[in-house]
Length: 96
Image (cartoon, rainbow, N blue to C red):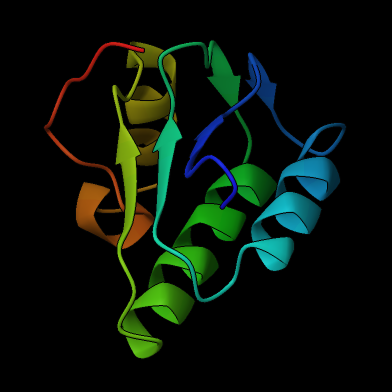
């Protein structure tokens, strides 16, 4: 069984989002925890991937959480007016 934890990149934007989206697609239907502690910046495209993944996993009735949300990720969401829950952001902090 594959590891259910993935790490978001430091710069979660147009240059890295396709890799993350591809990895998420390979894990559809499986519980996933994304660790976002490394994210320094996040673009609208990265946030869109999180929002659509959150919604898809909810429809699939599968656990999807973004843990250890960095200040950069939270700031990007707030700047765009996106609720943390819509991105799967959890207040839960875990260590690797």
